[in-house]
Image (cartoon, rainbow over all chains, first blue to last red; front, side, top):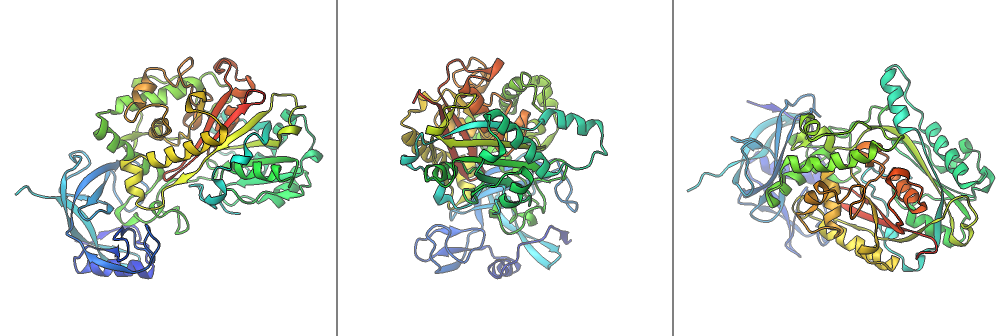
Length: 138
Length: 407
């Protein structure tokens, strides 16, 4: 089932990110000079300002840093309560996303999570949105 | 000029400038009727939206009267009329002044730039005018109200349904609770302490005393934050009039000197610095700079006007500037540290949580009242140095004021 979402920001550099997502790949830009991973997408490394960036395929694994639940609606097309999580990806960047299979009510600090992709659409068309599910203990 | 609400503009000119200590003073203050306007709007829902220029003019006229000056004395003007209000040249016509200098740079809080302009002789009497009609214009602080011209955290995460200043503060406090074992009840102590001051302020928007039950009964906006953890949205104007220190001695009130300022901002990895560090590196760097410029230690600061866009952000500033240790800010608020008679009376006007949300400009006015020793019931006895803080989701800009003759 396809979920309706508020519009993405779609500069050329963002188009690239979403294209990888449609292949179910979470790729962010690593700077070939200072190794910093920038997010959101950028033309120049947010750390050192240089422009040799590589779209690195990430593990998709991370841990929950924080979370919040909207009770007031800011988007007509989304229901409340609405959960968001902030994930520290294993490779270092912080990624704001949604939880799947858990909520703000049972999120825990440092909970291990793994990326998943859900089918969405906005005014620009269909896309795959990276979200995070709890990583099952081995 | 345009200034986005996160206050970013030409950060370079906001850094401390040690030659500028005690060069200029605030000689006039004016504010509009925050509480009265709010009550009138509640009583008559058909009241037309306030006009931002009219609001600015009222504050200007009051500041001029407070300073004992006439319109023809004003030869410098700065306009910060938000949400596409007019600039300084257009405002000058409405105010009936003919400035030879228009201050167009320096961000949302241009005191540093104003001092530099006065010291350089660009003008002798500079009026800084702020006004916003956030309430009557229906300003929303979340959803798709921000375009691609501000900081990306204000608009980039729409597809995940995340936006609003409130949500920034919510992520901070959720992390804070996990880091220090704090609770939502603990956070209530901030809104309650700040409201206690507002009950003593005839001009405050919210004047009813607040109990912990009232706080816990307030609706959530973004969990874990409630309505009472977030600043008001109201209309109003503020004006400050500054002159060079040597020309500031003859007014009706004690002149209040600008003694120091600092600035620091997050330049990368915003979510990390904002949520996990609560801007401690930025707050620490900015306050060190300001104290050095002011020739002061933090212990000299006897009164604080923090940027309480959210209750939790006031705690971030108390901790990040070093007034209390990390993790101890909520205990400090609960135990009366920021209250009347506390070790650091803070937001003694009721702050932006209870007096008015004037993007910090009303906070500046309270620093001046305290240092004039004209703060009435909430006067900090003998206070000689007061710190104002403008702190956004990714920047810190403290300004230190002092009483003339006591520097």
